[in-house]
Image (cartoon, rainbow, N blue to C red; front, side, top):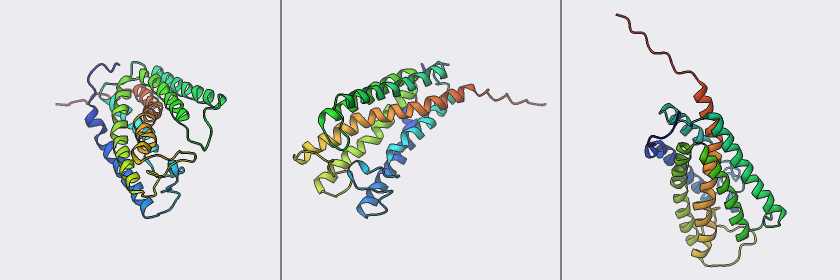
Length: 227
């Protein structure tokens, strides 16, 4: 089975993008109204809150994969797609560990070098995973931008208004700078590069496994028509 036909990306990502936007707005509302911190933590980076859109790519990766297989747009080989996704994860981990060994990545502190290294690590992994099932990769890439562009814009507005949410507070060690420079550094760059790659990589990991399983299922037997 190949994925050489055009992928109906818009129809595939429409509802996932709407759900993701709804979760984003719910998260914002919860932080502004100071709801339970376990779900709506306003700390820099979100503080590991249980409610957030970073959990959605693995879920939608499975949804996209099953839909693509049903459309006849599955990978050439389910096993190949899974291996590529796993290799992407290994490549990301290797670059991150190399950065830690070199002293570039320091937990709890922001640095431009660390941001670029982490982004590069995810981008390399995402590219490897993408190659295993391009139809899934393109779908995840489109979904990633649909999910993250609204967040990037929201962060700009939040920073201009000093809302005190995780969308506008700065991480430890972040230097003083103007609103637009701050937004570019911790809003635009991460949302439109780092999180895009994260979405493709994590969605490909779960999606490739789901796709491989779906490919192994026998096709339903044709209905018997009686006179």
